[in-house]
Image (cartoon, rainbow, N blue to C red; front, side, top):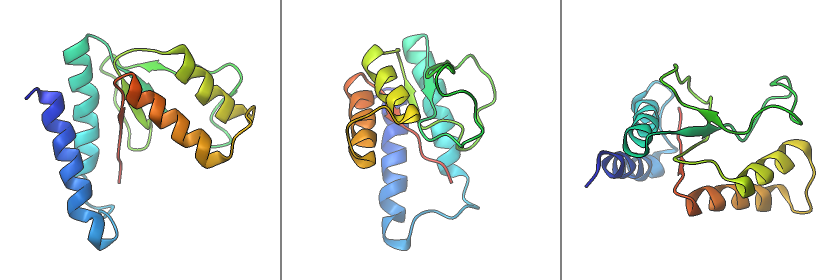
Amino acid sequence: MSKLQQLIQQQNNYIFNHADNGGSSEFDKSCNDISRDIIQAIKAEFGKCWVIKVNLYSDEGDRQTMPVFVEYTGQEIYNFSCDLALPKKDKELEQLVRNYWTDNYRRTLSEQINAIFDRAEEIGGYVLTWS
Protein backbone atom coordinates (compact mmCIF):
# COMPACT_ATOMS: atom_id res chain seq x y z
CA MET A 1 0.00 0.00 0.00
CA SER A 2 1.43 3.37 -1.01
CA LYS A 3 1.84 6.28 1.40
CA LEU A 4 -1.04 8.05 -0.38
CA GLN A 5 -3.32 5.02 -0.02
CA GLN A 6 -2.43 4.78 3.68
CA LEU A 7 -3.33 8.44 4.18
CA ILE A 8 -6.66 8.06 2.37
CA GLN A 9 -7.42 5.10 4.63
CA GLN A 10 -6.51 7.21 7.69
CA GLN A 11 -8.79 10.00 6.46
CA ASN A 12 -11.66 7.57 5.87
CA ASN A 13 -11.16 6.00 9.31
CA TYR A 14 -11.10 9.44 10.91
CA ILE A 15 -14.38 10.43 9.27
CA PHE A 16 -15.99 7.07 10.12
CA ASN A 17 -14.83 7.22 13.75
CA HIS A 18 -16.33 10.69 14.24
CA ALA A 19 -19.56 10.15 12.28
CA ASP A 20 -21.67 9.25 15.29
CA ASN A 21 -20.57 12.12 17.53
CA GLY A 22 -21.32 15.07 15.27
CA GLY A 23 -17.90 15.21 13.65
CA SER A 24 -14.48 16.12 14.87
CA SER A 25 -13.72 18.89 17.30
CA GLU A 26 -12.12 22.07 16.04
CA PHE A 27 -9.41 21.36 18.62
CA ASP A 28 -8.52 18.04 16.97
CA LYS A 29 -5.97 18.96 14.33
CA SER A 30 -5.26 15.42 13.12
CA CYS A 31 -7.59 15.64 10.10
CA ASN A 32 -5.80 18.86 9.08
CA ASP A 33 -2.46 17.06 9.29
CA ILE A 34 -3.82 14.17 7.20
CA SER A 35 -4.99 16.61 4.49
CA ARG A 36 -1.58 18.29 4.37
CA ASP A 37 0.09 14.88 4.20
CA ILE A 38 -2.20 13.86 1.31
CA ILE A 39 -1.07 16.93 -0.65
CA GLN A 40 2.59 16.10 -0.01
CA ALA A 41 2.04 12.42 -0.90
CA ILE A 42 0.40 13.31 -4.22
CA LYS A 43 3.38 15.50 -5.08
CA ALA A 44 5.82 12.76 -4.04
CA GLU A 45 3.99 10.04 -5.99
CA PHE A 46 3.11 11.96 -9.16
CA GLY A 47 5.71 14.73 -9.26
CA LYS A 48 3.09 17.48 -9.05
CA CYS A 49 0.08 18.30 -6.95
CA TRP A 50 -2.58 20.83 -7.83
CA VAL A 51 -5.03 22.16 -5.25
CA ILE A 52 -8.42 23.80 -5.78
CA LYS A 53 -10.51 25.87 -3.43
CA VAL A 54 -14.08 25.36 -4.59
CA ASN A 55 -15.96 27.49 -2.09
CA LEU A 56 -14.62 31.02 -2.19
CA TYR A 57 -15.50 33.94 0.04
CA SER A 58 -16.90 36.98 -1.75
CA ASP A 59 -13.63 38.91 -1.36
CA GLU A 60 -11.29 36.18 -2.63
CA GLY A 61 -10.37 37.64 -5.98
CA ASP A 62 -11.78 37.98 -9.46
CA ARG A 63 -13.59 34.73 -10.16
CA GLN A 64 -13.42 35.37 -13.91
CA THR A 65 -9.63 35.46 -14.05
CA MET A 66 -8.15 33.86 -10.93
CA PRO A 67 -6.60 30.43 -11.48
CA VAL A 68 -8.66 27.39 -10.58
CA PHE A 69 -5.59 25.19 -10.07
CA VAL A 70 -2.75 26.22 -7.78
CA GLU A 71 0.40 24.13 -7.89
CA TYR A 72 1.67 22.89 -4.55
CA THR A 73 5.38 23.61 -4.45
CA GLY A 74 5.97 23.23 -0.72
CA GLN A 75 4.21 26.41 0.38
CA GLU A 76 2.32 26.53 3.68
CA ILE A 77 -1.17 25.03 3.38
CA TYR A 78 -3.62 26.68 5.75
CA ASN A 79 -6.76 25.04 7.09
CA PHE A 80 -9.66 25.40 4.64
CA SER A 81 -7.38 26.92 1.97
CA CYS A 82 -8.23 24.16 -0.52
CA ASP A 83 -10.90 21.52 -0.98
CA LEU A 84 -9.36 19.20 -3.57
CA ALA A 85 -5.89 17.86 -4.29
CA LEU A 86 -5.11 16.40 -7.70
CA PRO A 87 -2.14 14.91 -9.55
CA LYS A 88 -3.00 16.75 -12.78
CA LYS A 89 -4.99 19.62 -14.18
CA ASP A 90 -8.15 18.96 -16.17
CA LYS A 91 -10.04 21.30 -18.52
CA GLU A 92 -13.45 19.81 -17.72
CA LEU A 93 -12.93 20.21 -13.97
CA GLU A 94 -11.62 23.74 -14.49
CA GLN A 95 -14.77 24.67 -16.40
CA LEU A 96 -17.05 23.09 -13.78
CA VAL A 97 -15.37 25.10 -11.02
CA ARG A 98 -15.31 28.33 -13.00
CA ASN A 99 -19.02 27.93 -13.82
CA TYR A 100 -19.74 27.38 -10.14
CA TRP A 101 -17.72 30.48 -9.19
CA THR A 102 -19.40 32.72 -11.75
CA ASP A 103 -22.98 31.42 -11.53
CA ASN A 104 -22.72 30.36 -15.17
CA TYR A 105 -24.57 27.07 -14.85
CA ARG A 106 -27.76 25.29 -15.56
CA ARG A 107 -27.80 23.00 -12.52
CA THR A 108 -28.73 23.31 -8.87
CA LEU A 109 -25.92 24.09 -6.45
CA SER A 110 -25.85 20.53 -5.15
CA GLU A 111 -25.67 19.17 -8.71
CA GLN A 112 -22.76 21.49 -9.44
CA ILE A 113 -20.84 20.47 -6.32
CA ASN A 114 -21.49 16.79 -7.04
CA ALA A 115 -20.26 17.25 -10.62
CA ILE A 116 -17.07 18.97 -9.40
CA PHE A 117 -16.26 16.33 -6.81
CA ASP A 118 -17.22 13.46 -9.15
CA ARG A 119 -14.93 14.79 -11.88
CA ALA A 120 -12.09 15.28 -9.40
CA GLU A 121 -12.45 11.66 -8.33
CA GLU A 122 -12.55 10.47 -11.97
CA ILE A 123 -9.14 12.04 -12.63
CA GLY A 124 -7.53 10.74 -9.44
CA GLY A 125 -8.20 13.69 -7.13
CA TYR A 126 -8.95 13.64 -3.42
CA VAL A 127 -11.27 15.60 -1.17
CA LEU A 128 -9.49 17.31 1.71
CA THR A 129 -11.06 17.59 5.17
CA TRP A 130 -10.39 20.32 7.71
CA SER A 131 -11.48 21.12 11.24
